[in-house]
Every structure is written in C-alpha cells, then in structure tokens.
Length: 154
Image 1 (cartoon, one colour):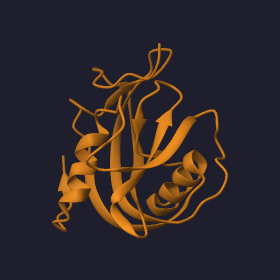
Image 2 (cartoon, one colour; image 1 turned 135 degrees about the horizontal axis):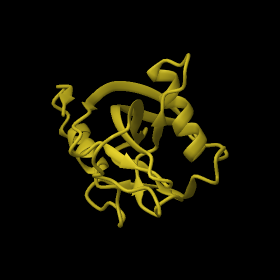
Image 3 (cartoon, helix red, strand yellow; image 1 turned 90 degrees about the horizontal axis):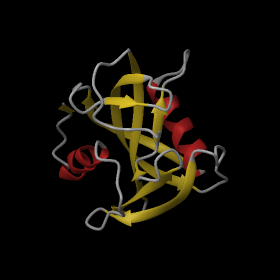
C-alpha cells in the first residue's frame, strides 16, 4: 500500500507545512516534486518536528525534498478538514494533517537531501500542472494564486 488521501477515522493529528514556491522571476511557475511513496506530483512539505518553528520546518522540508533554499512569505491558508486531510500511510497509520501552507520564493538550488522521498522535481506553470497530482494540494495552489491577501481556513 502507498500513501492514500481522503482516508477516514484518523488515529492521530499532526502539524504539517507545505509551500507554493515561485521562481524569483515568475509567480506563475511553481516548484513541485514527484513523491516516491505514491508517484504523485505535489507541493514540497511535511511534518513539523519538535522544537521547530513552522518557518524553519517549511525551509527544511523544501530543502530536503527539492534541494532549494527558500524565503518563506505569507501564510496562504490553514487546511484541517478531516474530509480531505486524513492520510493513510503504509501499515494503516491514519493521520489528520493540519497543514499550514506558505508562499515562498526559491533563492538557490542545491542537492536533494532525501532522495528516497523524491523521484523528480521541476518548475511548472500553474495552468499546466503535471499528472497525476496530489489531490489535496490543488486547493492550496488555487488559494495561493488567487493573491487576495486573505488567509484561507479550510
């Protein structure tokens, strides 16, 4: 079994972060990664570790999964709806991820630190996202691209 979305009956709640990372010269192109656990494209991100701020966790997760250093910007939204945020992992563990999604700008490229998590990375136009795509990340991207300045709570 691989990571599955829209699971039910969470066994735990964890705080997670994700980032809609833009190229400095283009807000329409965002950094995506192809996950090794289910071969879906999506935003870089992961769980906050004990003793970390959400900003440091966002920087760490993006660096580990993509090799990019980033400047973390505004909070796009808080995503906690158990109808969409329960993820089932291999072994049957079901986690309701409360996700804080941030905008960020890529500042420099480097080496991927966790190649076991990432099959590919690339920048893609938000109007031409690669498939297959992590379903719960599409809303975060739409909210970020809306540029309303409003923090979404979903």
